[in-house]
Length: 247
Image (cartoon, rainbow, N blue to C red; front, side, top):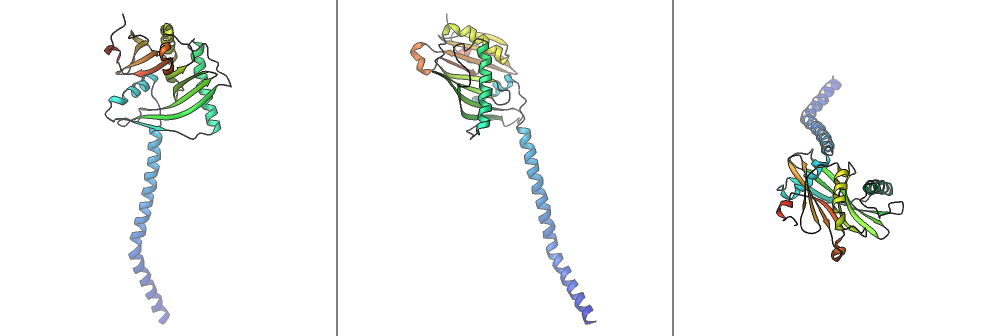
């Protein structure tokens, strides 16, 4: 009888303790499940953001909107510590795209082979904060071949070169302008809407990109300004109309 009463007493104490701690244990378990769910959702959202489905024209439109977006286009610059395999892959991609331009007659004097040096500079990401599907990642790359060098901006997904700057040692002249403008449009598969010859050494070429007018500016430097680079090609908003046409 005494043992039976002791068992009843122990059972009662156990029930009392469980009543105190059980809600807390259940809540803790539910919180953990919720945290696990939230983390899973974050991963799924991130993968959606990283999806790149824009056309070349839409990517150019995203770049030129940066200065007039009132902060809607987020721009981040990072420098990654890539391994040798990744750098080798990037070098192969860059040389392949430059060879396409060379085959079209854009850089006839440059040698592109295993001795050509490719240096990774930075990675820039453009993201429309109101429409995550509008996203672009580009790499800034410096290429050196003998005494010739240039800096290119290359699209991470399509591998297309979107801009060229600081071209040195290629002997490019202003008289090459029409040929280079034509070659560039063919390379990016862009249809010209208009070409404006502005002040000496400048060409403004307008393309249609969705609702935006994408204008590429081609700058051909004279010999006096060779230290600034002999050629620059970069996307701009339609500033061509603000410059009087060269007579």
